[in-house]
Length: 501
View 1 (tube, helix red, strand yellow):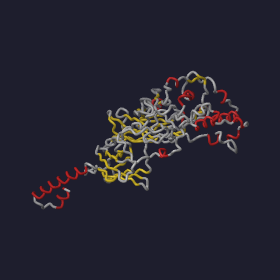
View 2 (cartoon, rainbow, N blue to C red; view 1 turned 180 degrees about the vertical axis):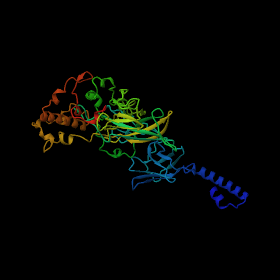
View 3 (tube, rainbow, N blue to C red; view 1 turned 120 degrees about the vertical axis):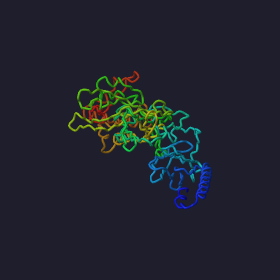
View 4 (cartoon, helix red, strand yellow; view 1 turned 60 degrees about the horizontal axis):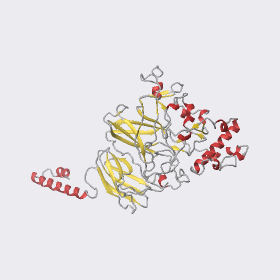
């Protein structure tokens, strides 16, 4: 208003201008005081509208802000993350369809620290306004916002007081950016690994940290660190899917995976003799992964010059330190200046100056804390500089048991022209009732147990192998001889498990 006055009334006397300045100042103070109660202040940043559309099942929050700033919207009462946007032409908007719950009030924060709150217009009577008070504990398998974190993969009954796990705040992105992806796409997994293991729980997080400025630059591991933790999406479709709880056992316990109980040493053939036992086999810790830059390039930057050396790291599942309760960030422990790809082969090459942080071998299970099948788990990736978080982003590290052999080999398929029907003796077809753990694990786990048995039987019949009999001994787990799971890639090569290239 003052700018408008000076532009269009340049011939006004000094006294008149002074009076108008005083009037304008008083008016702004009055407006600001009034706006303090409803969050509708007149700063450069504000929420102009927060509205729930019942007919479209859509939440819309929009406002104004400063150019090129990032906006983060949360539930003002619970702190639950809702969405982000970047200010474009002075405006921003966050729109969420089919949210798991509707907030009563929202909070928006600009990356420079400015914030505003506003009540959601037309919010339903049951809007989410816990206001910091812990909601009543959900029953086992109940839908709960913020519970899609991976946490522990152990089998166990949910704690009675299980609620939303804490999440790291979405902050920064003012002076820096962090960009993160996975490089494996949809990683196949197993519901059960007692008989066979397709692939281990394994994902790869890649991230670059950019310092903004007239000449942006990529930071290296001496200038920044990258950490990851579990995070949830209130718009995740599984939260409203009553059929997603396939990881809940008949007794109400949650099953995630038995990989660490059964399969760890089944991957010993993929390492030099005696190497794998030297690393941790603790639950929720991923397989060791060698740093191929150290292995093929070394410190002088020249491939196979003689200064190469072997180093390896293991990465943990988010929430490992306090299953179902905590969510402390883990560090992505590798950094690559240059990344070699099969350099000792004619098709090999070196991707130069990638400057990325890498979390290789991060393990995930296909079930979340409530036993829901969740193939798209999210992680919150943060860049820290001098101990301060300067940038944040969320990305997916997918894991799926959907690429299953049960469509042809399960006990439910015993007729027709499919591979399972090729068994000479159909009485040999295993069913879920053959699972000694039947009734103590989810039905889908027992079905996969039987499916894997049928596959090995058929392999023995067709190729003269003895997979069923030769792997049932000499595999001690807690002092008890058990079946050593068959990993197909021991005989059938795949670059996915050729970690040392």
